[in-house]
Length: 158
Image 1 (tube, helix red, strand yellow):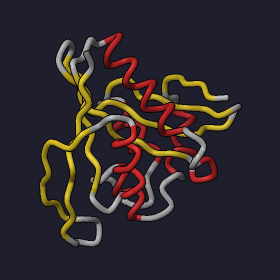
Image 2 (cartoon, rainbow, N blue to C red; image 1 turned 90 degrees about the horizontal axis):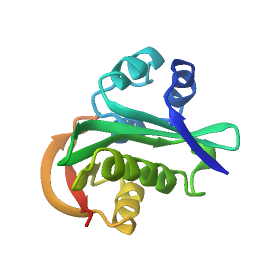
Image 3 (spheres, rainbow, N blue to C red; image 1 turned 90 degrees about the vertical axis):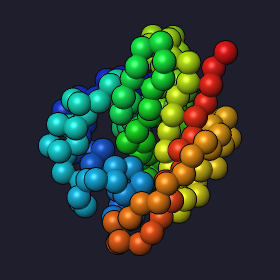
């Protein structure tokens, strides 16, 4: 059973262990250094909006937040990550639904933006399944200095 709550400092050590490689961390948090430092994660979470933890039964299953949130306009989701042992059971879909609810009910946002790297096929497929559509793309450098494309997507709500 899924539940959600605000991030607590004691959660950060567990969440920081979720990205199992430089590539996974790059997808979650492009400017963070691998391995992810729990203290850095917590400090950054305090600069974000609605840092949210998903639990599955009693286990921390996922984490995400809003990079920015403009009331009555839009929100941008970021730092979405799922516990590797719990992938494939709907954690990300649940987390995104929770953040969407905050955006549209609490912040009265008209739309949500999210960005995903072209190499993150699972993320791109999930966002598409959830109704996010691409509207822009930009070239970036990956953690290993290769050219990648950051695809910006958004979802409008009526």
